[in-house]
Length: 307
Image (cartoon, rainbow, N blue to C red):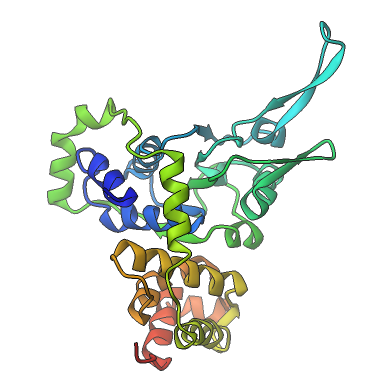
């Protein structure tokens, strides 16, 4: 059974709805990308991310962000051992294969910045010493909607380190009825790993062999540049958007059982790559324009290559 099938099967008993989120979590895992999940409290962000993390073998750590948390609480620090008369490294929770960061925007900017090197380079620097993180390493972060009490906005640099962004809203009435029915099971849910670290690493290598034609690569770059060129856009997507469209579409093609990428794969993940990478000019936001309008315009306007 494939990695994504094993994970999805183990989560189906506990996660109601959120199928697109589960698929995106698998895409993030296979493409070595980090994912930011945003939504109001109580809609299943943390539960879904936690159960997904538990289904993967290796080390799993969870950090609950609070306003007084320090960078050393995340990455670790050296302390002097009196018995050994030497400095010893106490590793922080960031030294894990899957790191769940709950309510990231409750942490102050200085602490948020502690994740930048880890998410980009897979290592951390403590007291001048650069230490590699476990492989694979993936950050699943949740955040409350912007402007919530006791929150600090994420900087554009921080947001850009996340490959994908997923907004979670309140469930449909029929989904909420199912959630109520499963409440006791969900609250006590603990999932045993269904795939090993070796399974994940092997799947990640297989994804890298998925073929992406020159025409599809050009389509990716054309979408990014179209968005940058819109008059309503104050700050457009960086080259990381192109990279994650490329990597994410390969992962999606792999999940679909294909060994090559179609333009439809690029289209399917485009909103998750672009949504948090588009900043609109204030005068257009006041008029009711939002980033999804720009994304839809790009998908409708940029010529789609033939497969």
